[in-house]
Image (tube, rainbow, N blue to C red; front, side):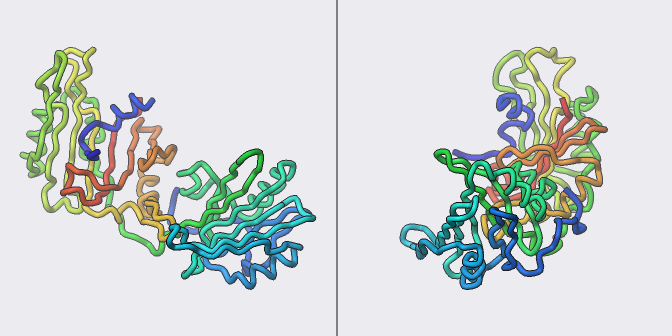
Length: 348
């Protein structure tokens, strides 16, 4: 199935489907040595490091009376690229710890900790004391807890057949500061749902004032507004690069008369380089918004509040507007190459 950026507006899809700065934050007490055991009574945290020396891990777990029950080597033929180490404990509220270690790089992909139900609050508290909280963007993406120190781990609690597991998944950190767009385009943000700005006026401004070029229009295909322009896509002038396209959806709700419909309901800004807003982590291969893009949105008053699939929603309560940040390839944009898109619409 083809994916098109201009197939439906985000507002339309929502109707039917229904961070923030680059400076370092306090992640809790620092642990200089990742192999220094973090233990409180009968509970503990596993070793959490970007890469692991399993000989050292074994010594840590042996000190906690852990026993290496089984080591299962990686099996590339079965598409399992990690070695699995399973430790068991007889005198703890933790029954088992599983380390998933990449077979060549020794990256710690995941650690799963089996905990007795009565000890769940204690382990949650220990994790929070050691830097796991809701403030990092990846926590917001998944509604979980995370910690970013020398490595970025996401903590989730999963229950399977009455057994509770604390699962620590590692994601790649943003490797370096990254450039982003200079500023958010403000040419049109006050013209959404303004009755003076319908298709003819938008076309006149885009081509006459901004020097853009009309690429495509789509019409309403049914109902009393059939034949009206429901969206228009313009190529931005070269001096606006890295912005390459602006697109407009026009509201032709069936309940509205021609005189009270047809104005802008949503604007899409398309940028040529996805790295202006996202980095792809080198472990899970997930596209994550950069600190620089988050800082730019925060500067303009747009605060993250929801993730839906690969779309990230940022709300400005004062302006009553929402930006949706996305990156992927779309069949109707630049031959399907990956781009950065910002959708803007008014908060209902």
